[in-house]
Image (cartoon, rainbow, N blue to C red; front, side, top):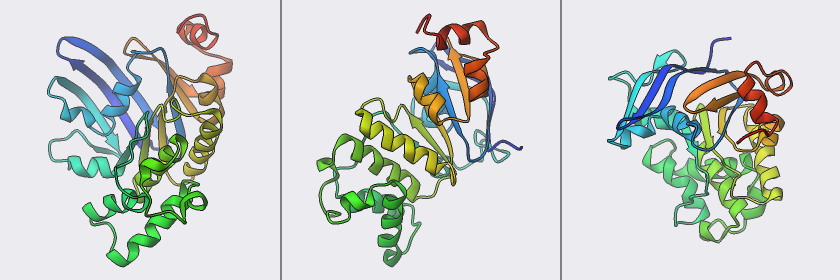
Length: 251
């Protein structure tokens, strides 16, 4: 199967510090890929390479290529704004705008001119339904998004991401700040979303990776030490470091 997203020999340095080393990974379409590994091993850094967020950091130097549907998003003529519309991002801590629930989602549609004014309410409703949040907020769409609970805010951020219809959604530890009930709702949501989107998630929870992902990559000291189908990696790891990490020997 042709990969939806593919990195080829990705290297990244912050100044003289070499953080990512020749990363080659293929992300299949409409699957969940989890990146696991100890803190500081490069997981989130790799995730940010996938939608060119490091372009905003003058100390970051990226070498290599990343292909979305066979097109190199690091080519000089590729539209960077278009990259971030096709490859959305959900961060570790919920970051709703200080606006109403409705306008949190409508904002991206307006600024990107992705929907006519009369269509926006329908897109907002569908996005909130798609993030399992509609029934909880349908009567308070004009209320501040900051009044929502942490778990609701994270689902709102996911609704905001899917409203602009990306092709890939990157999630950087999206449940690390949530309670177990909210975590369960977000995990259920991710499994549902892969019917329409390709998802790459960074997680420190090996249990979460095993529950929701189709493929898993183990990263260590800037290297992709192992990558493969989730069940195979967890039951029959090919790399000794992977086996030690998932058995709890370190990390």
